[in-house]
Image (cartoon, each protein chain N blue to C red):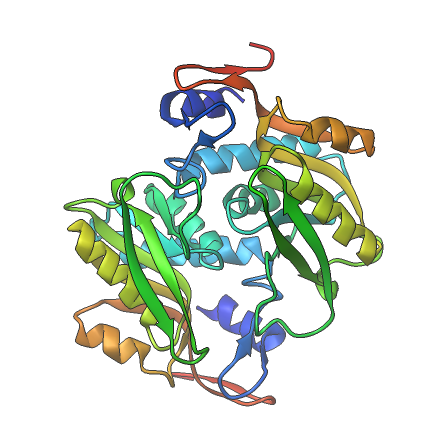
Length: 191
Length: 191
């Protein structure tokens, strides 16, 4: 997606060869017009997928996923990174480990918002090792739902996430695939 | 806002006289069409306010705030509840206490996303005691910015938040003002 790649080149900043700072337009300050374009681009790519729900993980995926859900006319379900005190009812839960950060968190969703026969389109801001996406696959599986597509805003193509998800049969579509980066240069796949 | 009140009556659930569960359309599963209406309603109410930024607090405020920012043609800034490891640069920070929950968290924003002369429209999902809003006022003040309006999706009108904010000179606009609630009945102000 050209508009997104230009935003990454103009406003993104590679802190090192692994961390890409895009907090001026994606995950702290948010360019909502760009996010609407992102959502509509995902919707065009996945419109024939017979999805019943758009799912994302709080909180950076919410803006692009909300515009995707609106364009597809579907409800959005935001998976939570921990159990809220006021989340009552039957919860599905899995542990997501971040190998790069050395951290882990509980990913949760209420069973009533993800059910038998649901076909999920997962939208997330980043794909690196794929651990978060596998967490969503796990919760969908617990619910009797299937993940029919994964839309990623920025893929770190030098990380193993895409290969692992494709090996699991997933249809992964990324709007910008970063092949490599240094402080001076960000290179995309297919440039 | 009629459509919102109907959603609260049909899908909301008062767990007790203080906790209103709206996670089937607002903060877990999200009705994005309703959120677009919410955003456009805030935009109409605040369109003459000469705002430069829409601000919200992660994560339940993001969807309504994104649609508000889009309708007003403004950037959205999402204040964070804790410092991310990859948030670098000059951070503004304040402590927000939740009296009802007995918890507290650090609210942070990068100084580069809130500056001298900025005029902020704060959008949030709930208003109860007003502590979160006062946290945003504090960060805006540190940045040399002003908060020129506060748009709330659901106000617990039986809590002191509105009075405290109005006493501080704030223009508070809520789309649904809950006067009282029990397990069987939710009553709005002005019904």
